[in-house]
Image (tube, rainbow, N blue to C red):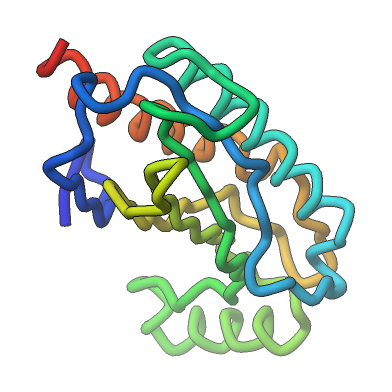
Length: 183
């Protein structure tokens, strides 16, 4: 596990991941795995928007470090990213809600569905040799989004966009660090 800017990320960088071995990258479209089941707060359209946004941003950021290509080949990395979960959880009790009157109001908000709900997006990335399929790097991260105001609010790309951008920036910084050390 590595912590950058106070955020936890699980990363593994293999010894073959270097500029000596790879000059280009093939960025696969971001996939949703396992296939998510849309619900009253997360629509299929929103999940597809998040996926398309991430694919576009990944290509733009990684393309500043390595040349983007459209097909496998020698000295080509393949970047695969999957969104493996979108969670929306009811906000926990706050310390001040332990006071009996505040606890009653907090419980009432939870029962009526007006209590804020925390949003988390989980992602897993793999860097593989595009020819052999050998894993040369991997990462896993949970991104927190903006809170939704109760169970009737719909998740939108804008609710997670800023934190997704930070995760992409962080990931591209790791790639920049790896490839700048070996050029």
